[in-house]
Every structure is written in structure tokens, then in C-alpha cells.
Length: 205
Image (cartoon, rainbow, N blue to C red):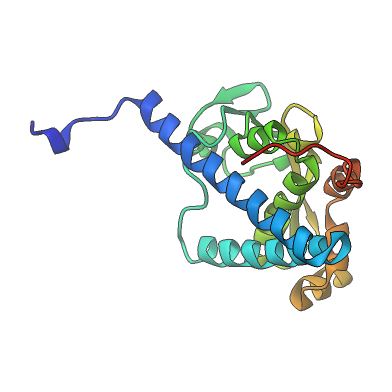
């Protein structure tokens, strides 16, 4: 076997995924901080929400076209479904079967959440998490994936539910109206935690 055919140990592959995840989180913080500095608190946050709606739309459309969403492993430390624990999302289908119930699903140790918290950016981290609702509505406007727990706000893990959308939510999403943020109450709560950014010490990226 030549050098190119050698297998990379799983723990090394997972760490490389985490490195990429941290860079993604830092890029989100850099763009978000700049928008707020340039546009002010209110307009900056609205711009971030609109950007996440568009980002989620692109992700949802590519997922619908058959492309992979996130890496199978490494992006999160582990997953649980009921009392079953696993580390590779490809195992989810075998554990949950055909009738997947999001309310029994938990995601632990998100590399993005950890990075946001390391940089004292709960609010901006919560704004990133709107990608989950956006990508689900892009794939199927009649359904929204919302948080029932969020690691960025201090819950220790992320939990979800898949719910029907309202007509207003569908219209707001289609028109990129910032009122769409009401789609996920957990993230609204998280966004309000660090409302006063002016007096907060910010870490370097």
C-alpha cells in the first residue's frame, strides 16, 4: 500500500473536522461583528438574520438536491436518540428506524457552540443557529426545525422539534422579513441575553 492509500485514524479525522468547524464559527463572528460595527446594533442584527435566512435557504436547497448536510462525525462530540448513544450520524437511521422523532434526538458538544462561548458571543452564536429553521423551511416550507434546548444559551446540548409552519412564517421566510426570527423562541431568548454589547469585553478572534 502506498502513502496515498494509508488510512487516517478516526480521531485524527474528527479533529480535522473540528478545526474546520472552529474556523466556520470564527468567520461567522467576524462578519457579524463587522455588520454591527458598521450598521449599528439594530440594523446589524437584522442584516445577520437575513444573511442566516439566505444561508439556510442555500443549505436547504442543496440538501434537497441530494448533497450531504454536515460531516458524519467530528462536528459534534456525540448524539443521543432516546437511550441510545452514537458518534456517527449514519447510525441514526439504524437506531431510529423510518419514523424519526426529532423530540427524542439530542446533539452534544457542538464545535460551533463551544467556539461562540469561548469568545463570549452567545447572542451572535444564537443568530447563527437560525440556519436550522431556515434550511428545514427551504427544503419543505410547511415544516420548521426549532430548538427546544440550545447549547449556546447554556442548556448543555441541543434538542429539536419538527413543527408545522404558520402562513406568516412562510411569508416572512419567502420575503426575508426579520419578523421571521420569531420562528424559534429559544433563539430569541438567547439573542436577548447579551443585548448590551457596548459594555462587554470581547475576545480576539
